[in-house]
Length: 287
Image (tube, rainbow, N blue to C red):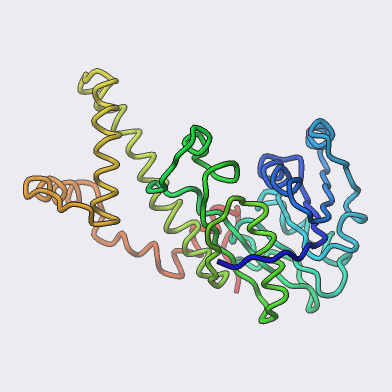
C-alpha cells in the first residue's frame, strides 16, 4: 500500500454530475486544494447546495497538478479539446473510464500526462462490520475497495500524484493496481460489464422467469437465488467448497443450453474495439 502526505492542486470538471458529486464529496475531506467546475445550471446548483465554491473552468485548470474529468465518455473529446491547451506543462489529465482514452478520442499534448482510473467497487467477499459498510455497495462512502489505474508516464512523481488522487476520490481505498490503458479497457468493459454485469442482469431475468412463468412465490425464488449466488461465487471464484456431482451435471447442461462455444472471443482485440465503438457511438475504433 502506497500513501503520501503530499498535497496537490486538483480540478474537478463535471463536479456537479453524478460521478462528479461522488468525487467531490470525498475530495472535500482532504487537504488538497480543490477547484470545482460545472457547465450545467443544475450541476452548478448542486455544487452550491453542497456548500462548495464554483470555479470557472479556465481558472480551475490553470494551475492544477491534476484535472479529474468526471464527465460522460461521449463528452470527453470536446472537453479535452477545450481544456488540454489551457493546462500548465506537466499537468495530468485523469479520466474515470478507459474507453475514450483507449479509442484515442482525447486531445493530448506532449507535455501533459494522460491517466485513467476506475474503482473496483467493494468486493462481494469484503468483511463488512457496520450498517454503513453494508449499505455502500458502490464504494466511495464507507466500504473499502480497490482501484485500477493506468498512466502514460514513467515519472514516479506523476504516478504518485495519480495514486494520491485515486485514493482520495474513491476512498476508502485498500490497494491501487497499476495496468496499461489497454489492459484497463480489457477489464472494463470486457470482464466486468460485458460479462459480470450481463450475468447479474441475466440472474434478474431468471428470477422474473421463475416467478412470472413458473409461478414460484417471489420471496421463495429470491431467497434461494441470493443464497445460491453467494455459494456459486464463493465456490467458483475462491474454491471454498467443491460443487456437488449433481450440481456439476446441471452446470454443464446450463453451459450447453445458454453459453456459446466461442464466447471467449470477447477478449480479442478486434472484439474489444467493436464493443467500445458501440459504447462510444462510433463507426469503428481508428488506429
